[in-house]
Image (tube, rainbow, N blue to C red; front, top):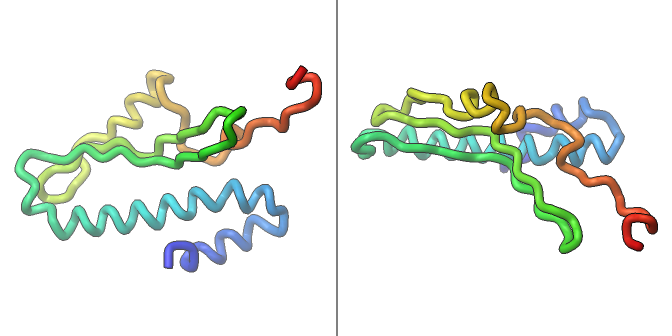
Length: 117
């Protein structure tokens, strides 16, 4: 349900599995973000003051490698379901958050024997 709409997008990446694996979390995030915004839209009238939403992509790794989080959304939404403030853009302009785009930051370089010893 979440990946099917992104099939063509994943095919455009080509047959390089590493590129597809980098694109896949973004596809999943976009599908889940649309579902979340739909839920907020249906219940917006019950929001009294507003709602802060933070979302992103979390990559959990092994015990010897740090996990990664890429923030994709940090918004304040009013009681009509509209974004009234994009706080992520402000954090990015201050250099306090990375840009929400595919990059090598997701995947740590493989450890070599020199790293281990």
